[in-house]
Structures are given as C-alpha cells and as structure tokens.
Amino acid sequence: MTQAVTQNVLSVSSLSAGYGQVKVVDDVSFDIKQGEIYGLVGLNGAGKTTLIKTILGLRQRFSGEIETGGADKVSYLPERFDPPWFLNGYDFIHFSLKIYNKKISNQEIEEAAASISLNVDFLKKFVNTYSKGMRQKLGLLATVLSGCPLLILDEPMSGLDPKARQEVKRIIKDVKNDGNSVFMSSHILADVAELCDRVAVFHHNKIIFIGTPQEMLEKGAGDDLEKAFLSLISV
Image (cartoon, rainbow, N blue to C red; front, side, top):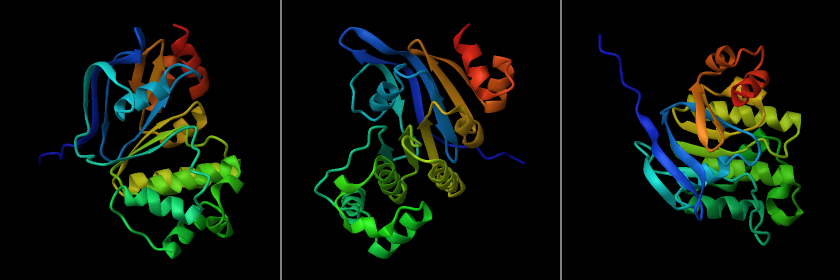
C-alpha cells in the first residue's frame, strides 16, 4: 500500500536576508508540512522576526528561494500587534477578513471571542481601550478566522495571562486538527514542547537544529527543552 505524501505548505531554501550589508539570516533552509505546527526558537534579537518578514515578502532577501506550496494564502500575526485605534473589534475583524474575501457575522465573531475569553462587550469599543492581552487576542481571532492554510504567528503568547495562554494553545491545536499549518516563533520552550511537531533552533543567523521536541531533548542532552536549547546554542 502506497503511503500518502504530505504536501509542503512552505519551503525555504538557502535564504539570506538582513539590513544593508549585514546578514541577519544566513543560508537558512527548512520546510513546513500540511497539518504541522512548526516552532522557531532563538534568543531575543536573534533575527526570528527578520526571517519571518522575509518569508512574507515584507523584507527583501539577498538570495534564496521561498515557495508556498499548497498555501496560496497566508495569515500573519506580528509580535507587536497594534490594530488601528479608530476601529472597534468588530470593524477590525471585518476589515481583516475582507482582505481574504471572507465574510463573517457579528454573532460568529462573538462566539469566537468568547472561546478565548475576550469580553464580547469590548468588540463594540475602540481598540485603543484594549489592554495588550486583549489586542493580542483580537489579532489572533482575525488570523484564525481567515481560514488560511498557513498561519504565521510571531510570539503569539505575548502579553497573555496563563488562562488566555491555555485558550490560545487550544485554538492553535484546533487549526492543526482542521488540517491547516502553523509556523510560530516563541521563546517559551514549554509551549513549544506542548504544541510543536517540529522545531528549528535559530542562532547566530543560522538554523543549527531541526527536529521534533524529543529529538531536541536528546541532541541537547537536557531533561527539559529549555536546558536542551541552552546546550545547543552553547556548542
């Protein structure tokens, strides 16, 4: 019996990028498969966001190839998410989904907001009245509701309390269960261990490890992912 081949939704080959003559991303290659949660970990300032923005076409690459495979549409949640202050929650989500030619009712927005404990009463308020955590939830809602086959989330747990983090993790798992893919950067190794099928360690402008969380533990010779990560980057 022939085993089905899982399609790549993103393939990055020999990618280099940076600022001026300075390489922040140097000869990076990896792929993300359909239905996979793929983690990108590295120290703050390592260049994870530059890598993500280059993949999205928001920063020009020096060299390399980027192919989106079956992911003809990609939805992106930046780390520093700051929606237009003059929109309320409903307006922002409707505006965001319009980019993907998708319409959704206010009732569906309210149901999705309730699922991550975003107070539905705030949906009619301007987003400049939202806390950082509430803005993060709103951005995640818009990203997930796009229905895109690939979601790129840059530090999606940023600014969230423990309860909200659990709710966000459940939503990310639901995205995978629906057959879609998630590419997420994070410095919270416990979240990576819980969520990710594979993880890439980005250090000194390069990817120095790709594998499952269990393989990362074995390679880093640590009893948790944080210690394994520190071991890998100290080599």
